[in-house]
Amino acid sequence: MSQFSDVQNPHESVMLIVAELDTGTGLHFCSHPVLSGANSNLWFPLPEGQSLHCAVEQLMIMNHVAHNVVRLDVFHKGDQHTDYKVIFNTEIRVC
Image (cartoon, rainbow, N blue to C red):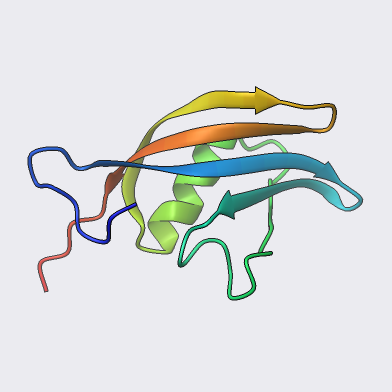
């Protein structure tokens, strides 16, 4: 993922793991400088009753990574996890 997006094509992507953990459903962004955490082991809870798309979009907007999430494409399904490719429009900052 590039730090700066092409203005003509602002779409970026990041891989996301959604897994059933001891404490509930968790979300983990893979190899992202902000959303993966300092030790690349940061997990976010999926709030009960919130759609996956809305939860992912809220996290990405709140952390100034995305303007919005375009779609979540299933990449791989396992027994207790699903990997997604998240396609999003980057946040464009003026200052």
